[in-house]
Length: 374
Image (cartoon, rainbow, N blue to C red):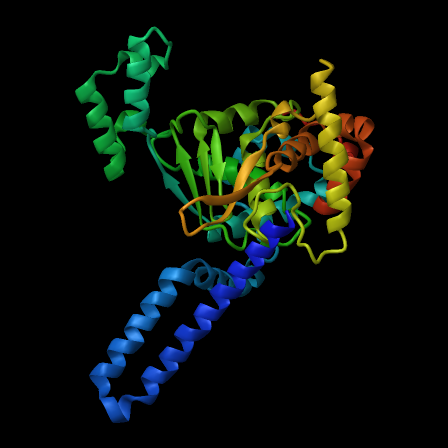
């Protein structure tokens, strides 16, 4: 692990060094206007600018987004939702019915800023032609595959891949006819619940939310800059706000986890934070507690998916071999679902996990009143 961390630090140092070289070249291009001519200077400056954008576009976008938030946040201080949006919030997002009255104006303010900053994109149906070929080949050998691939012909599959690759959304693949206020509100409300008493800077990298009718085998995916959600899965999470299953809460918890270091490792605080050690210790004990509960057949308030691990890739060797290590990427998102939707059970069964989450989110949902009827 120490070797991997050392490699990560070395990669950051190299990136900073390369940036300084390009910035020096840009400055040099300005200095040579008199001796080499304007044309040569502009060419060198343009090449340097393009290289900086190619390697550091995420950081540049981040700086601009922070400036935009800094400019717009004061204007939306105390903002309220239009009546029809408030009606959607109350009718569709059941978990928000439990929210104490004193927190509701703040939630509306957060939602207003979120909808101002984040772009919603409609997507159709995910399709991978190679998956189709693998399934059809397996079917010939008697191995079962997805019903969709069973019924699809070869040329129909080619057409699906063509439409998907070009971003064509057919009428049958649309989500409720497009990105409606209901779609935006349902997603924004649960996303903003996570930062209700925190800073909007937790979403400082977030640019887009993609709403899919079909996302393949996944209900959702997240990076710190983009969240992909399958609309049917979002709706299932809204039906019951007490079952501990919400793909929206789950994926946006990933965004919080990755905000600082772009790593989904279930420790949503920086290594320099005084809380980092506490999170490490809670993760070690909590993960083992959940694992033992499911191995014994007892079950746990936190979903079994919390035990899933994933590879965190930090680079590649000269021979092309990927350098990575396993991280417990799903524990924090699953614990977040339990914290908000099964809060009393989590507090009673796992007080350490609940206390750490309570201090992080600066909320105490176990003390919230029962949900109000619509």
